[in-house]
Length: 100
Image 1 (cartoon, rainbow, N blue to C red):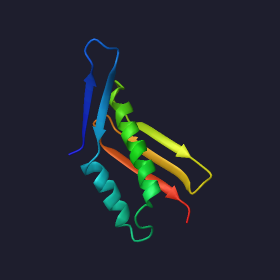
Image 2: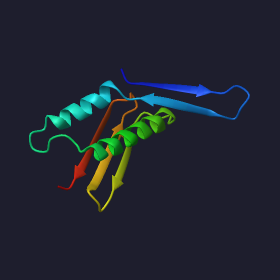
Image 3: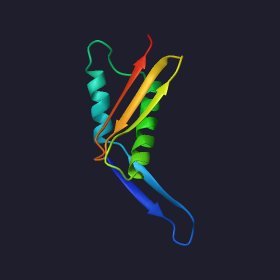
Image 4: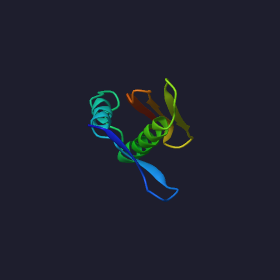
């Protein structure tokens, strides 16, 4: 199960959160790997999308509204577009457009 844990340090001006993407992340990678046209993402793309997904989940956990948070990255390198969407119920999706 994917999970997020918020924490604070008593007496210090420090707070944070730890996100662990398991089931949802495995399902995203499984669906891409089963795509007969494109196949699995290369490892660097998996790393990028994983980091973006974790960041988007952390941002969504601190936003008080009923909507989706979308994080997009455009580039002129091997990854032209990477998109992560996290809904207010923490349902998520992620995709990337890769050259080659």
